[in-house]
Image (cartoon, rainbow, N blue to C red; front, side, top):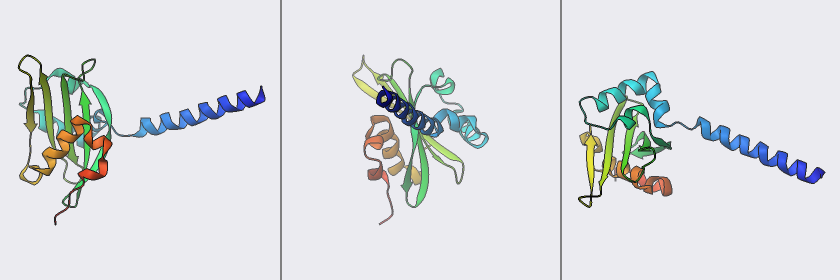
Length: 153
């Protein structure tokens, strides 16, 4: 009996620690809730035709960091609640200069194609930034995070 009690307490303790660590991982909603991130997000989505769930919040993945040409960026992603297969959103954020670029993807079943809407892609992010954003939506960034750190050669 003592062994079972200790095993249960150990399991609960470890689970609590992992939930705490998960809760502290930044997400898209925590970035948008911050003063600096919220300002950049408002600029990013201004005058864009995007679904309401992007503003209200979707199913979020934890933030990941990438380095492109020596600059560290944060990458956030989310999908449409109850229908992740149909709509996804990702953004890449530079805390250093408070700029964002994004990608909204919609799976058009009727036309058998994926429709991509790029948001504020600068010249500095044109190739590598687009690659990272699409990788965030496809799951490649989460599965192979070190493969998306690009430097000048």
